[in-house]
Image (cartoon, rainbow over all chains, first blue to last red; front, side, top):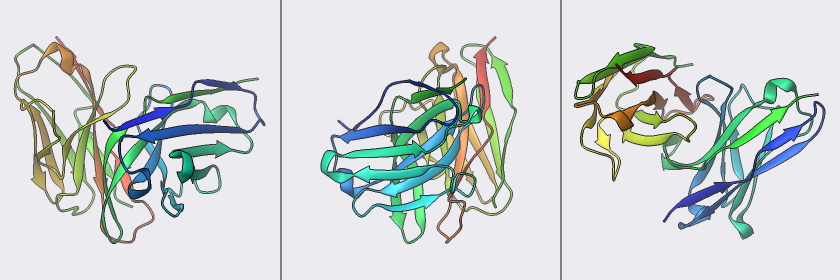
Length: 123
Length: 111
């Protein structure tokens, strides 16, 4: 059974750093892209970036380029999303999901999702 | 960038009703469109991929159609467990910077 299990909720202060995780199991972790999505309170879904754990190739949404860092450790089947200096506006639920690659520059459906990690940034 | 619109933004229907949601792309996206269901407090779930393909395990009352710029998502007989927000999502096969765009969502509840 494919599973993505995310790390627990975090409460941080502005300016602090944070790294949240997403551990995959039940499939070949290095053969699928992993994506991250932000959902701000009461809002919709925004894709942040995707990573291929096999070689750590990463693509960022222009909206999040330079704001976060996506990484992966294939030895432990885990992807990460990190911030170096959090802002109150980073308060949101963050989801990871497996992304199906359809060849060339084509990345299609997000077929398995983690349960989400709630990040709260408040002074 | 490709923009996605959904309508309506919310709807209220009775159990057993047929529910239809539309999603429109700002340019031709062929059939590169997926639909997700997000129940309150839960992660999104893939229902339909490539405009009309039902994801494994998803009830057959859900369906999708369309191509080009206009797409439709249908629940043939609304059930209480279908209370959720539904999102369309486009993808692409061209070397764009914005690889994906999610629609703004349609909130469905029971009348």
